[in-house]
Image (cartoon, rainbow, N blue to C red; front, side, top):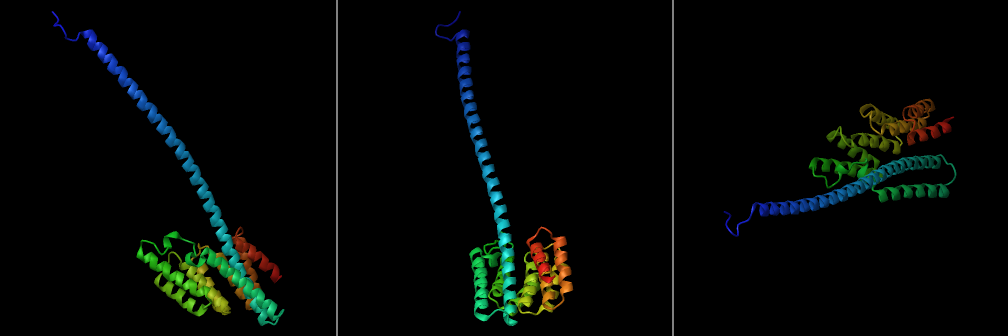
Length: 261
């Protein structure tokens, strides 16, 4: 006989059913919140992916623009050298020509200072900044930047020594190809064209995959031209056009070939 006040089997089943229903409702509610959260996260991920893609595209465009600016600076330096030669040869006269040279020099300095090109000749590499964690890399970047700043200041003999010392300490790796190229440039701006040719040759021989190679070839050609060897100059310019057809230096080479004809 059942004791009065005790729960019956029917009561227990009813309680279990009620508990199961409440549990199902709570699980459904949790599932709904999780689905909403997952949907939100997915949407945020899509937005982030879109932003990342935009940033990458912007970075690529910026890099391309920066490369083009650097190419234009090289061309401007070449124009200055041409104007200096015209002045030395007694071509169109002093005041006007000097004003043109000064204007071009100011334009180059303004662009370089604005973009801080000298601090990261590139390249161009963020890991080579003064805040690099690796002290060796920081010292390396600092030595290169100091040598390049000396070059920009027009002290070519001192800059050449600094770049040569840099290559003695760091004969390979980042900046080595650039340093070798700037040694050639130092000789070029000092009008020691034979030595410049030899130094540019080291760029093409020691660093054949460097982006400085087409620049070195063009400057070799200009050095030969300054020495009166137009045949060698033409061959080098044709080599640039053939091996680096879609570069700014190929455009420079085509222009120079027109002048040599």
